[in-house]
Image 1 (spheres, one colour):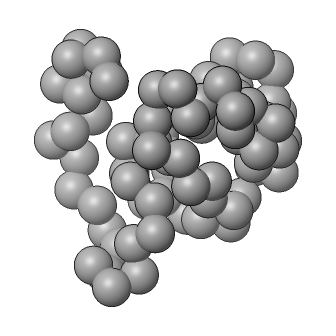
Image 2 (image 1 turned 45 degrees about the vertical axis):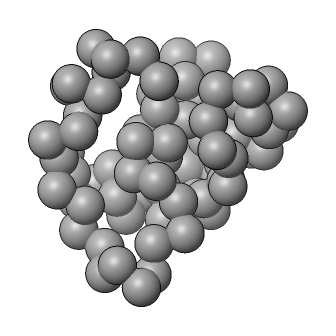
Length: 79
């Protein structure tokens, strides 16, 4: 992962309980940003983007796609 990206977002505190974490916080943020830059206009479209890019994203991240409700919860809580 790009060091600049990690430097910007690593300080964010993950609001989830440890036992409920299935996805890395930085992965969810990165997929959300990429989805929005690709034209996604809502949480379901961000989820669809992530699922559609699964093969490509596997080259960069350990990939487990979060559902749109988890993406929405985390992004709204953090920002």
